[in-house]
Image (cartoon, helix red, strand yellow):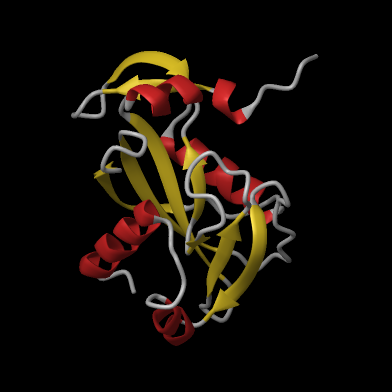
Length: 174
């Protein structure tokens, strides 16, 4: 069986109201700037620290940038809730994670980089030992809110993650 590349993964294409209007491979979705769906999961450990990581250099979008969320694109026919759990377990390298809790959703505009995507933001507590997926995560640590705040101006962060972080703070989720 041939392994599918990330660019070949099939995703639902949605409209400005988040209604499914078709399907397309990820590469086409990005190239044509089609609206699709993503999940962002803020992971906190038993001490309340946030999982932060640097993306690998070979990611299709935002390679080698830092992120305070795990997550990714929602697959064709997959729900946001299913994608949030799947992506969190995959990226953290765990199984048996509690179901992430939905917090908010917004339409993110990448400013011409790869179109727009509906962004569902979740939170979950992970008390399991993480072994992040090496294909996704080049470096990781759990940071206190103070440590994270100190690094916001120093590190280069993924722009969609920063947008989700700002909305989460406005929502009262810090």
